[in-house]
Structure formats: structure tokens, C-alpha cells
Image 1: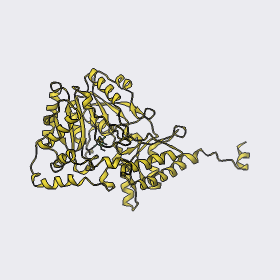
Image 2: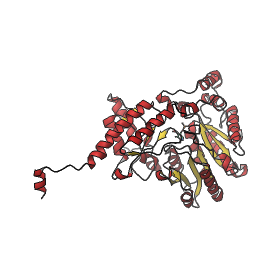
Image 3: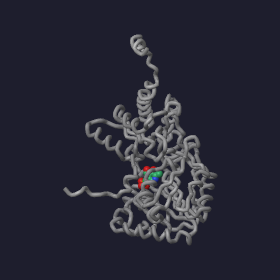
Length: 422
Ligand SMILES: Cc1ncc(COP(=O)(O)O)c(C=O)c1O
């Protein structure tokens, strides 16, 4: 028999457990008739959220105009609006020519890295990361170099440690702010330090700001582009999360900073965009409505709002837990609880997640899926109803009690066992 088809070798370095082995096992269980609570994907539409009506209407009103390909960088009117939005925030030298609309931020992450990297080039990626960033670096022949964002530091990076990782091959720094999976929101002073590092070492800033409107308790989100000034910077945003329209596949990348320094990069993005012709057109008609219309995300993130109350349910459950610790998420759609250090020895996040699914019907993502060097965290999305999250954490506690609590109990020997042991 002819040999099986070879696949790209570097795929073996890529992980995407969010839709990986555990998610496949979940599908098998569902096919067998099990009902699962799946908290592995930040997909608002799967939890009853709808895209705002004025966005839906904008698409419906223009559906007659969506048949042709559009410009490879996206609909001109949408790019104008995105550029104006970023200019109003204070980004330097943005214009429609430096805006790229893609099939979600996902596609643009790949295009940006493909435009930038030569074999062996390094990209500084946060750990934990949203694993597409490391995957896309690898698949574009680069090397992700992880900088640690430790729980004890609020999941924020130490800029000195980050700078120590810069090598002659380093090309870019990736930031995810507000952060998936940790919920960290980066303070201005930290962003300024990172900008200074990028300026000193002539690195491109790649800032994934897809959760830019989702913060809690007045955590101040600071877009990095205005702080970057003329340092070349790509800011990523889109409709998937803030506007709850993941399935429309609409994202954008905005290049700011020195035009002469980033001209070749811009042209490379343009060429790569042209090779795939254009992004899906219908959803692009919602961009103007999204960026100039009524704010529908803030009420969800304030007390009484669905996301706020979901987050409160998780925070309270973790506080009441005998085993869990949590850095309260300040933004985004996730919580990243850890197993407390005094009971974490030997804890295996993957085995725990599998056990939780098999025994309690709850699917979470093990922390090690996010390229961390430890095995005692997991991620849940904050998208379910608060009551469902309370139920989920009751089930999680039962599994932890069985896996940690009971294992730690010292079972007294029976008199016969004691005699035999002598
Ligand atoms: C940090 C981050 N970046 C990018 C994406 C992908 O977004 P899109 O739906 O625009 O492709 C996600 C999706 O969860 C994400 O969490």
C-alpha cells in the first residue's frame, strides 16, 4: 500500500486544545446521548447572546451589494470608519490604506506573521497565550519565545524579564490586552515600558485587542497604539466578542506608527490579502454600525449585566472553594482559576479536565493548552448564565474533593492491617 500522506512537520509543534482532544471526546459523549456544559469556547452566540440588532439590520440593508469581491483590504467605507475610530483614540498615522479587514482576527494574525517573518525569526509571545499566536508563529517558520505572565504578578509580564528574552532574531512583541485566558488588563505604565522596549530593539508591536470593550469594575483599558506613537504597531480588533458576532468572521488590523519604516510590511500585508482576494463581504457592512452606533457591551459588563454577574458567580465560587485560587478577571470573557499551591502537588490539569467531563459533564480547557509551564490551572468562559456557572463550580468542587481531598485523607489502619504492617 502507498505510504500515508505526509503532513507539514511543524504541525507537531502546534497545539489548539480549545477544540482538541477533549472537545472531540465531548462530541463522542454527546453522540452517546450525554448532555454536556461546554465552557471551552468564548462563543457568545452559543450561550444565547445575539449580535446587536442595528448590526444585523446594517447587513440586511446591504445584502444586495454583497455579491462581488471587494478590495483585498476590505470595504473602503468600513476601513475609513476603523481608521477614524483608531485616530480618535490617538493612534498615530492611521489611514484607510493601513487598515486590513479579514475573516476574523484569526486570519489577520496569520497574515501579519506571514508578512513579517523569515525562517528562524523570533516572536515574543505571552505565556499563557491565546494559542493561535504561537501556532501562527510556528506555521510561518518563526519561533515563539514565551515571556511569563505569572499569577503572583496578576498575570502581567515583568518588562525586564521580557526584555532579557530579546535576541538578534527577535522581530515582534505580541500583547493580548484584555487578556485571554487570564482576564488581565494591562496598566498604562506597563504598556509604556513595553513600547520603550519595542522602540529600543526596533520590534513590531502586535497587540490583540479583540476584547477592548469588555472590562469590569472600571478597569481602564488602554489601547497601545496611542502610547506607541511612531513605533510601528498593529492593533487587532473585531466584531466577534464585543459585538457578539463570531460567526460573521469580521476582524481588523490597524497599522500605526512610522509610515516609512512600515511601508514594506504594509505592502506585504496588502499582497497577502490580495492572494486570498477579500474577506467575507456581508459582515463588513456591520462595521460602521458597530463603531459609530450605540454601545451595547458596557451594560453587560456592569453590575446587573449578564457578563458582570457571571463573573461574580465565578469569583464567589472560587473564593468559597477549598481548592481554587483566582485572579479576578478585570476584562475579557474568561476566568483562569488555579489549584491552590498547598494542594497542587502532582495535579494534572488534563486528567482533571477529562475526569470533570466524564463524571460531571463539564468541559473546561486545561491550562497547559495555553503554553504555560505548570499544570494546575484551567479556563472557563464567563458566557453562561450565572446560575449555570454556580452549578458548574459545585461540580468542579466535587471532582476536586475526590481527586485532592480524599487522596489527602489519612485513612487509619485497621488493627489487622496495623499488625501486618509491623
Ligand atoms: C485573544 C484572541 N484573539 C483572537 C481571537 C480570534 O477572533 P476572531 O473570531 O476575530 O477570529 C480570539 C478568539 O477567541 C481571541 O480570544
